[in-house]
Amino acid sequence: MFSSGVFLSGRIIAHLDMDAFYANAELVRNPALRGLPVAVGGRRGMQPLPGQQFPTLAQYEGRGVLTTANYEARALGLHSAMPTMKAAKLAPHAVLLPADFDWYKTLSRQFKTAVRELAPNVEDRGIDEIYIDLTGETGGDFEAAIELARHLKAAVTRATGGMTCSVGLSENKLTSKICSDLQKPNGLSVVRPDQFQEIIWPLPVGKINGVGPKAQEKLKAMGVNSIAELAAQPVDLLRERFGESYGLWMHESAHGIDRREVTLFSEPKSISRETTFENDMHVRRQRDNLTQVLEHLADKLSQDLARKQRLAKTIGVKVRFADFKSLTRDVTTGLTVCTADEVLQAARACLKKIPFEDKGARSTIRLLGIKASHLITPAEDALEKAAEESRRTKGQAQLFLDLEDAP
Image (cartoon, rainbow, N blue to C red; front, side, top):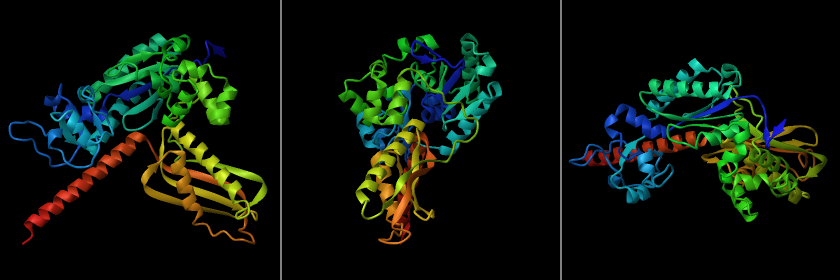
């Protein structure tokens, strides 16, 4: 059923997002940091200068990036993934602390446990965010959901020693995700079915999770900047410009349609796209055709990753020959993969590992596919990169000490 362009599901879904999680985690065990601009991403072993209580960005030298920054630091222009040396120029007196991943994981478990005690239907989306299906607990009543959300926020604060979160409430996951960002920090935002156009449509299209920078550029060239302008585009035009499935998804998202359920079990560890040819394709003579198919699959898989907010550590290809025998090959790099170009490059590297033939059973194929696996969220990727930077700089420091101690 449709009303005001919104798919009415009768559900109430919450998206709970911790506020500046890593930075505020440091404030829990060191309250003296409250009110100060704090960035996370420094090297272990950094000591404050004489007369200072904490190490600052002014002391940093290296090529690392910030894992996160609290709201006081963000007001100075700092943000996650910013090169630390650039941050030092913007806010040299901001406190810089090393990331403590064990501590962050502990607090993550604590806030999720507190939520499940009040509302058990929780979908884990990373270290600092979850979806919660509140339909059963509230009977589909938004006033009851607002009251429950307040209790959830209070429970999270108690469980974490004072950390805050922001909650978005709506009838689906997509809108709730947008909603939770509207009143950060420590916010509670609600979008009822009849409020979607009023509240969501004026926002930029980039607020829709899955509409990335490249899609935003293409939309801007079409004169589309807001979600309302996206909603006004004919669905056939979006399908033509962005592909059948992605174009339809964009159209439905702009109208507040999202049928995804809150998933209580672990999501699949991989995403794949494949196609079976009507007629077998020769690996040499029809190489151009196969290249086009590979590019198409890479583009679709990239869109799937964007919609699910996942990055892939491993890309694999699957080839089924005319005799129905299949071969798979994969590559794992030190970098995460998400764009169509990155997926395509990795897939080509996989194909080079397959022993094709000019004649015989391995000269023609009937199926080609690409799979992304070892999936992680962008937040988990940032944590791993920060951890690697911490290990690298710690190793360099130890080497320096070893050299100093050498006879």
